Amino acid sequence: MGRQLNVRSDEAYEIARNVAQITGKPVAEVVLDALREHGAKFRDAAQLTATQKANIEAIRAAARRAEANMKPGVSVEDVMDEMYDEQGLPR
Image (cartoon, rainbow, N blue to C red; front, side, top):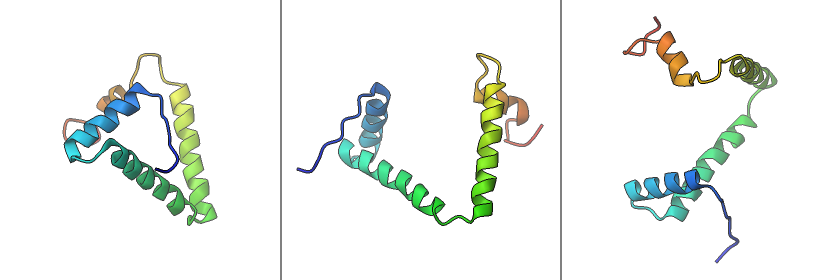
């Protein structure tokens, strides 16, 4: 057996267990698949141009500002419901 990774999170355990039940894979394989998929995003990001990286950071900064200005108790779903109709089209 290789090295071990312990994640002490009820939410992570429930998600991994549910995905394992749905896919029929062992929990360890589900977690490894998720980590590989997430890790691939970082490898892809390393290939971005400086302009693309700057654009991504500008979008993230705008998201942080928007989050900081959200009223307490307002969820992302609430905001999306105001912006888009039932078919996902802008109001």
